[in-house]
Image 1: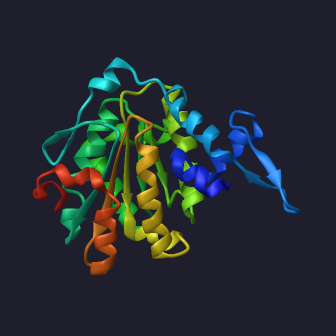
Image 2: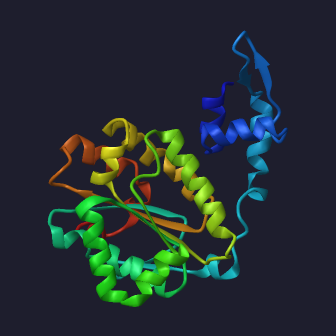
Length: 244
């Protein structure tokens, strides 16, 4: 099978699969003039069975930790979409979510830019005071425009970021992504939605909790439908949890 298919089966980015092959961790052979990588199905399946060894070791605290989102306790390894239709609704669950993580000393990520980012920092500053500046300077709060412009770039960014965050031994990694600003950075809306679906496999490998924010005033009905499909973790929750 080619690199794309192997990545799909393993739940990894294509860049990660290429690195595994180049390092000899996943057997690979080169074919054709372009020396394209090919993987045997049986070897990919065997590697998949051993992937538990490549998953970051979760501490006892991580295994037992729960996160409050909109007043509902939830487990890590979760990827949710929240829909909102007002400026006030944007912050209903995400500001308390980030505030709690920063107060607990957990690594937090905020994906936004422009006026949306300014509004977040203003509200977080009101809640945290000088602790916000300390979190930004120390890297406990990482702010970025977008994780990438394509599915592969974005998955590779998060994989590296999560491994780096795990070096401090956190119980939970928290991330909030504002999808309107993110859409501006991806090559297309379809690419962004494909990334959202692909992110699920990565989330299950790290003790993280990712909240993707969709302003319904800025997305079409079909796009929101695809966004909901890309977040199966929300299907077992009360509807009020994901509406702001």
